[in-house]
Image (cartoon, helix red, strand yellow):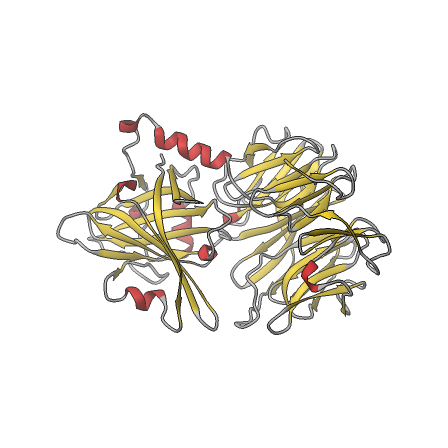
Length: 497
């Protein structure tokens, strides 16, 4: 079930040193669960998955605590429920224990700290719905999504479609007895009174999922994309996107066409789903990688490669369509710098017979797909944007100190040299050794001499920060969230699709 409610926002409060925990310490009781906590027998568990379906929400990639408030009763007051990021790239899993009673969600908070800390808070409408906590039982609030509107924030809520919770707790909260989570029971049980409105709104939010993740060409000349809320999108040149429901609720970070009829997807919580009929029906592909994030899927000569990450490690695995057992090729620690670390997701791209994988903050892994040999190299700074053009050149916007600058490598990262194009062009898209395209200060540029000179061909699409091309040569420009354009004349004119 699901509901939709609006929330008022208090955006971008600047705090010099204080953190959110300090801010709330005087008015809320911690209810978080650590891996070593035991569940008090007089309390019950509360679990909720939360996903953003908004591109302009600011700091909510830095999830923080969930504040709940008891509605009447002897425990009246606020409680903080902490989150787990295990296996998630875009979704927050909130888990905590509360005394028996009736509660409501009050506010969501996020925080990003560097030289200063910036927090953002969304306050929930009181009518969003109450939930009940019982001793020794689990209240699973299912999957809640939110989307920013011009006049507030819309929340939708729905049943969890996945039986993930018992194994998730068994994996990371070993001191919680199994009987406390088997079976969990869903709450928000007021949909029948409202004619199924919540269910309808939640289904619509999933169909309208944002995100254009990891574009992959198909044999028919189309593009496949992942999305924020478990849907696959297919884009045929000159037509609107078609959406397919994979049965997953978290973010799909990668989708590939293994054969002309077979699509494979992966993403949050390590789940892999396969369709043998071009997206119409889906089923699990093996056991996946429980509670890790599948950052990328790639295919090469019938082999399938998965780039799988946790908070501090990245591993590359291999299998085939007929063998769902994965073989680990290599594993690597991720190292993040406080001052220059950029919170980007790992990427894996195949160039000829090499798998090129980014290791945030500034590492590069090159795996030879013929020999299996893997070597690590470094970027000239922390990775901000990265791509491989049709000319085989590696390009990045990398941060050595305070600013992002463009760099090129023609030897798969062994050496890097400063790019000659304007740093505000970000990463241009090259379709072959000589022809490339870029966006600079609202104008669309083209080069036909490998970037030595650039000509202005017209106005750039307003929101198109990422460039690419269909197999038929048409260009596309898009962002990660849902705004996309196509050009059939080399970037002179654009149509928003």
